[in-house]
Amino acid sequence: MFSKLNVIDDRDAVSITIDGHDVLCRDGDTVAAVVMLHAARPYRHSILSGSARAPFCMMGICFECLIEIDGVANQQGCLRRVEPGMRIRRQVGIATASSERKPQL
Image (cartoon, rainbow, N blue to C red; front, side):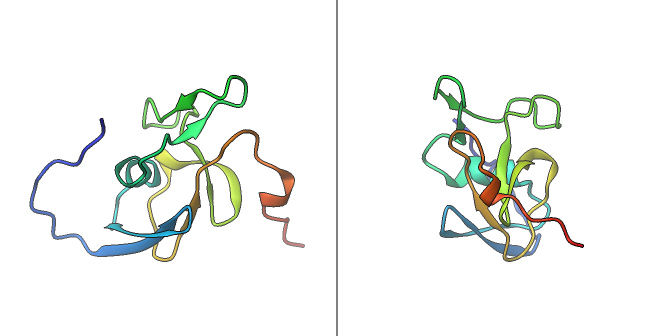
């Protein structure tokens, strides 16, 4: 199981939401790390088999960390740092076009 080391951490607290639940984390944490720490369910599910999946490499190579951030699907959670007010939603199955941000003209 994923757990955080018990160390003194003087970084600022950041408030975000994961699947509609308010979560406090630390400035500089990655989205993938925060979701794994605060979510009791699997990080996401495979689009083919429905099996539970979780980030593997934590450096942007495996794409197992895909997640919706602020309404934009298929973001690599391991490469994104949390930001105050960020809205994170785990992806189950294939992301739909309605959850993707429309291009700015």
